[in-house]
Amino acid sequence: MLDGAPGPSRRREVSDLYATVLEVVKHYHGAARITRISYGAGMPVDRLRNFVDRLQSLGLLKSEELDGRAVYDITARGQEFLDTYWKMRGYIEVFEQPPDPDERRNRRR
Image (tube, rainbow, N blue to C red; front, side, top):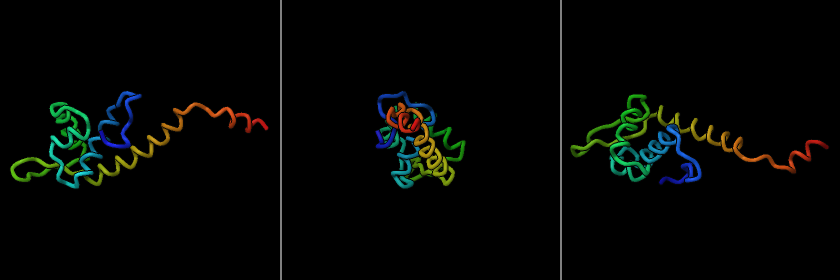
């Protein structure tokens, strides 16, 4: 699985899966084939196809034929989604951290 993706400690949400697929596609610079995306995202090909179709319908991925096979690339809108996703993940991680007891003590002073 791609570095930076949510770890095994929590279930991957649909938005996490979309971001993971987009990151894998981005890694291949316009030459991502479905099997490479499948390995990188840790997802079976049949399930991945549904995600790829949805990402294309949302305008986040585009495809073209290369040597008679589909290859995928991230669109500008897909990159915008990733930028926003990672920003939001940063905020969510801050909210999920337990409060620091020392910080609470210092605020009382």
